[in-house]
Image (tube, rainbow, N blue to C red; front, side, top):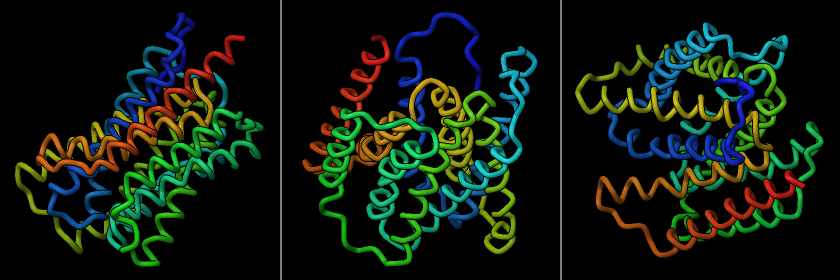
Length: 294
């Protein structure tokens, strides 16, 4: 959300921000399960709160004069906002039409699409360590969802794939707009999602209750709002392929929250897959940083 102020930053500041993004995103599964609302109502309510959070944060940083001074591209703002809104909406729909495991696994083919899109549009040619990490990530994801693949409906699987492609495209757009305050795109996407969901609030009126209200606030302010701020900061400091690799920690952390709050223990294949992904992310980030120092 905030442009660099010129002070010397930690060499892993960008990677750390993206990792925090993944941690915030990983809260979705737990808290969405706790809310007894229609999924589009959840998506809309979450985005409305996230938009309030991001707009407030934007006002604060504007007053401090730390936003980038370069002119903003209206076309990038609109296109990026629509693409990211599609990412969130398509993923919600996919979860209703196929298994959660299928939806997450298929959406997280996004690093492949991101690598290809960034190569073409941003000329960020993936290095050998990125391709190796992508293979390791694919193997890790296969291990995590080994016992869950195969129960999804075709429509839901296709929507999850489209969500993954949209997610990759949005990451490339955010990287391209790194000098134009990419947080504006995230703010716009949440506003669009909230507006699109308005009819569902009338068709499926949400019920109040402590669990429902507290969970939607966590989803809005932390899982989407804070995550968007971290993402906007980190995307200005790391390459697209690094963003896609580090955010792969999101599906790894999901079973951790389930274990902590429900007592459900992940399978050994999940633990093994998580270890492979973590190793891939760490090695890729360290090697990329060392190359940049040369």
